[in-house]
Image 1 (tube, rainbow, N blue to C red):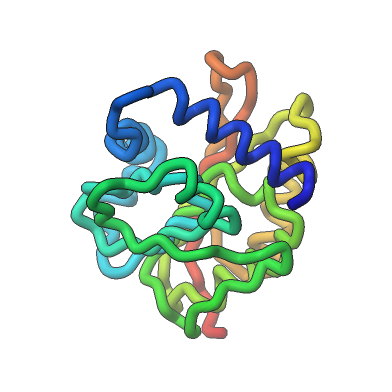
Image 2: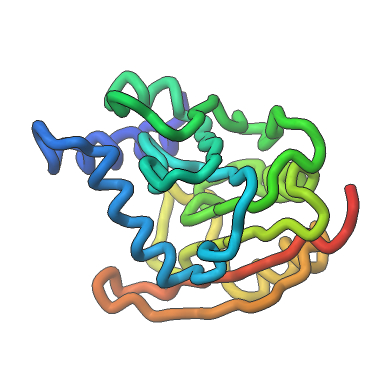
Length: 201
C-alpha cells in the first residue's frame, strides 16, 4: 500500500469515527440530496448505474437504484465499516492500472465524484469508463479545481483545460454542460460536468 492509499484510508477512518454508534451508511446516503442539487439530471436517469470511487459506502445506499459501487480500497474499507443490509452491489474497483472488470456497454450512467484527481492511471480509468458506459449513456463528473491540493492523496491538479483535453479531446465524451463553482466552506473551486458517451467503443 502506498502513501496515497494510506492517506485515503486515514481520511475515511476519521470520517467514520465522527459518527460512533450511528448508521454511517445512512449518514453517507444523506449526501445524495446535495448530489441531486449538483446534478439534477440524476432525477431522469434510470437503468444500471456505476458509482466510481465510492469510498466506504455509496451515497446511493437506500436510494432504490440499481447501483454497482467500486473502489480500489474496497476490501480495506469493508474492514472499517460495512452496511448491515447493503442495497448497493460493492465490488473491488480498479487497481493502479485503472482497468474496470466489466463488459463493454454495461452501464446506463456513471458518477465519478471527487475521484479522478486521486487516481494514478486516470487516463486508463477514463477510457475504461467510456468503454463500459453504453453509447448515449451519461457521465456525471466532479473534480476539485484547487491549487492548494497537494500529495499524498492527490496525484495531479485539474482545471477546465485538463477536463476538456482528457474527457473531450482524448477520450471522446461530449460535454453537455460544465459549471465551475466556488465552495466557500472549503475555500476551493469545483467543477460539475455532465457528459454523454457519444461514440461507440
